[in-house]
Image 1 (tube, helix red, strand yellow):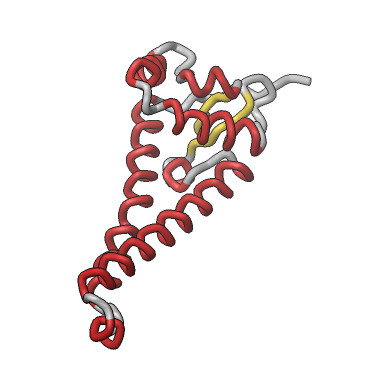
Image 2 (cartoon, rainbow, N blue to C red):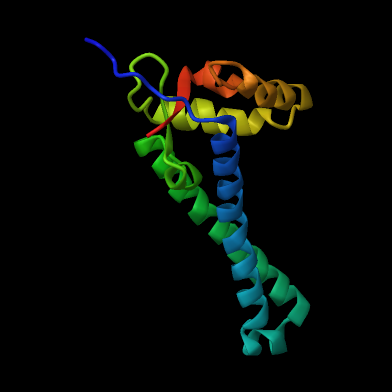
Length: 152
């Protein structure tokens, strides 16, 4: 079986997709926090300290929106190999050999969740980020999950 020639996503496309993903994660948080803070239940404010009610409502709204956007992102990554940012920029994660969707375990668990846990380590972050400048444009998390990011 002959595989079609693939075009790797550029470092700029990958970075832009990541920036878009961060915006998608932050925007709902800010919007919900502002709405909850502005329209908190007036009756609750008379029985409990209003500042405590505002903070609790804001935190609940923030957590709910954080969870919703991450679930959407995770479903897209697991099923399509694309986050919202990758979808907009027409790039996707594929298996580095077959060039098909690498599946939920490799895309989500190894590439997304494990990478998120490791990013707290400065050495890992630097190595992971700088590897994108290689000819094959594979970051450390791509090597771990055996994936590529390609243009579609």
